[in-house]
Image 1 (cartoon, rainbow, N blue to C red):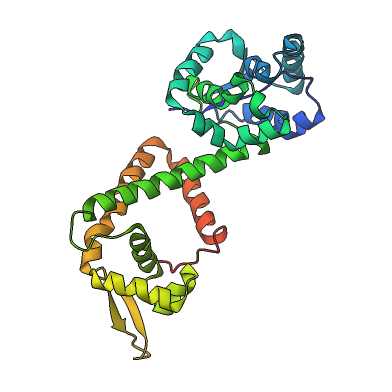
Image 2 (image 1 turned 90 degrees about the horizontal axis):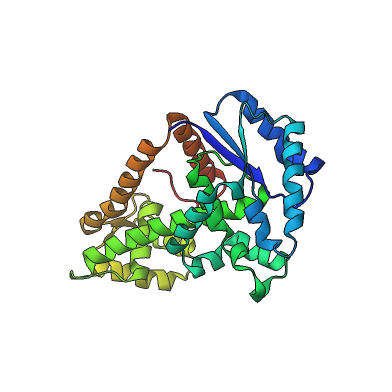
Length: 305
């Protein structure tokens, strides 16, 4: 798949210097790089109506104003496609079908929707169209098969939600597979025990004190959890090479029977990632993950393996 960009603005007023500095200038630069197979710039009048239904004339008049501003700033119809959202009826139709795939609770948890509701004082009187505008955004992106969608800081909550979604899916998939494997066997793990043994695995043979410090619990509480895991056969204690009075917690063969559960799912997802993204995108993805792990998560300092 080639590089396809989708971007645009809601025609709720004339564009100003802030728009130029914040996005329009960059769009012209991207347009002129020649890096994109296709570039679409949308005047999102349908989305603008979601909170301007009482004044549709304002939206209608500003469509032309925004289009003229685009041309004045340097967007070239020979290099990109300018279009009005409402003139592509398939977008509305696709949004309708997507609504069957999203729950109300998921929309209510959307960080951008929540912040916009507070900012505009909608509360319980929020228009349904505005409430579902993330669905409309998804329809726009997928309809044009866009894989580059420049956004502003106001869209960062969407990144937060997607990051949380990936984290939750990995976590739930792991525990679902873990519990399905151990629940019918002798010495099955509780949720807390499964978490504890994962901590011991990541800390790489910690002492009981290190295990307790990482979890922020007392030494006696940590000892209780460790003894249960020893009794069930998931970990063993080994004397320290430097201090015979100290023990290190190591994982038993029984644990390694299940250790591949998470790794197998990671392998599956990674195979899909390699199939979906270009080498350049993979390099960027690797860099972002490395920065996140090495610099942005200092509270979770674990030994590198």
